[in-house]
Image (tube, rainbow, N blue to C red; front, side, top):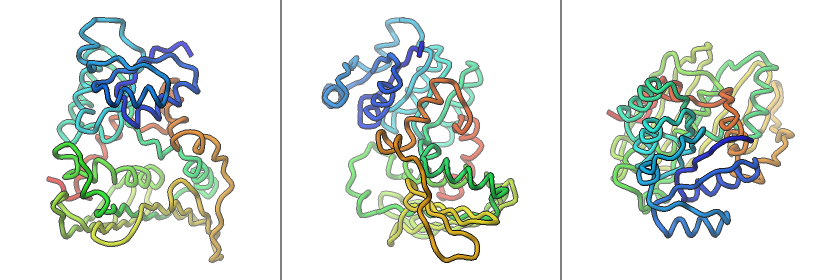
Length: 315
C-alpha cells in the first residue's frame, strides 16, 4: 500500500496497531514520548520509536502524512488530534472517546470540517467476527425489532487503577461507551430515550446504577441497565422477527431461534480476531483504504454525545 502512516503513541494500544500495520505491509513511523513505553514497544514489535512527542516531531516541518492513528492516553487524545488536523493531516483514526468532555469532542468535529478532513473513532468492536455475522442475520431477517444491553463495570477492579486526573470520573466515556456504541450501531440510534440513574462512587460520583429505555430511529424498542455496585458484565442482545442474537461475551455470537429455548454459538471465522486484537485488523484496513462503511465518523460520534451524557448522568 502506497500510504504514509503516522502512529502516535507507543503504549499497549499502539503495539496492537503496529501488529496490524505490519501485517498489512504498510510503512509507518511511530511517535512516542517516554523511553520506558518506547522500549516496551520496541521489544514487542521490533520497531523504533521517535521520541520527544508529536509537537516536537511536527516542528521539523516534514511532509504531511496521508494517514495518522492516534493511540495515546485518553487524556491526550484531544490535543493530539487537534495538532494533526492543524498540521494538515486529512485522514485520522483516533481512539475513543476522542475527548473527555462534550466541548472537546465538538471542537474536533468543527476543526475536521474546517480542514476538510476525515476523522474516524476507534470502535473496533464494530468489526468483531461475531458482530459482522450478526449484521448478516439482521439483514436477512428484515431488521431489528428490539434490543437491550448492559454495561456493568467492575468497580473493585477499576477503583485501584492509576489513571490521569478526570479519567475515572468519566469512566463511562473512557470505557463503557464501547458497549453503548455497539448496541446503537446494530439496533439504531435513539430517537427517544428516557434515563434513570442512582448511587455514585468516589471515583465516579455522577452515578453507579443506570437504567433506561427508548425508541430507535428505525422504530426498534430498546432498554438497558448497569449496576457498578453489583455483579454483571457487558452484553448486547438484538432481537429480530426470527432470532435473538446474543453477544455475551461480545467476541462470540450465540443465536436463539424463534420457538426454541436452545442457544447455539454461530459459526464464524474468528481467524483475524484470534491473530490480532479483535476487530482491529478490519477497522485499520478500512481506515487506511479510506473505506468509511461501518466506521464511526466524528460526525456520528458528535450526534450521539447528548445521549451518552444522559445515560451517564453527566452535566
